[in-house]
Length: 243
Image (cartoon, rainbow, N blue to C red; front, side, top):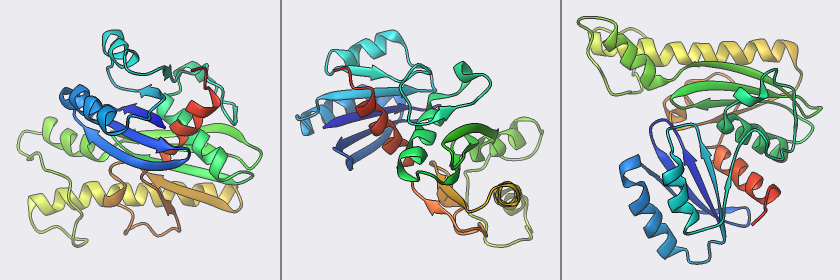
């Protein structure tokens, strides 16, 4: 069994795979991570190795605690990957994006694939049918947009994200929900249209913790897969298995 540890900006995900099958997934705040790690270790005693992918603040001391339990592969830009990386600054490419593209390369070979990950940021990553990763785009995520409206104005409230029920807001709260969510829907549909104009037979993947706010409103045909990143990390652990 493999343990996948995905350290994000807000939450840490722990997933257990048996071969390529996801058997357990948990998402916790950082303060609860090590307690949850102990519980997962006790429940799945067959875990043999782990991968750590971190875009958040994860220290060497915290990493060393995990290494006391399992052999650990830490994902970096030096990892063996199943695609040709043509990003102009590969050292700055986030490990989460590396895992997403790896997942696309393995699951959709010889396809033009646009991966849209809705997290703290919204990332767009494009892999060609020739297996070339060209890059993509980064824009503010859902909660970041809500927070910016509150932080950079005097009177707008800080709201919890919510799927809007209509097109026209008749209160400040409903106007914010519509403005944030609908603007992202239009952004994503717009990006997809631009890609479709340039690349034929485009496969679109929607993933990330905020995807459920958007999936029913998007006009385009997409594959919604909340585990796409975790599946990529599991593959990369196997491909870079030095344990």
